[in-house]
Image (cartoon, rainbow, N blue to C red; front, side):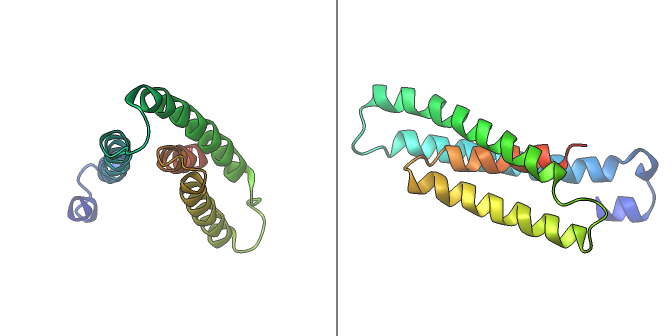
Amino acid sequence: MISLQEERRGAERGVPTVALASAALDNIYCITAFSIASNVAFSRTDAIAYTAVKIPVELLMGGLVGVASGLVLRVFPRPSSPLVHFTRATLLFSACIAQYFGGGAINCWVAGPVAVLLGCVVADMR
């Protein structure tokens, strides 16, 4: 894709950029799906009915946290502030680490990756 972009094939329409971005989102989706499947398969102490109810609640909770953090990261920092890209990247990285390990700390291993995925996507949308 990068060689196609350097040769200017489809670059005016943004095809290489969209292909790279969709591959990254596909990888994140697969990691999230694997996390959900491993949570269901290796649930030791929970009954299957409890796990079947717990996963949709975790998905919803992770979605809400991810969208909320993405909306906050769309606003902060202001575009006129110095080192705006470094600050935004640092905030995004810190939020993703906090969401992932925070979800694990409250024993919601599905909510963390979902929050990270949605937070990154919403923060990037303009």
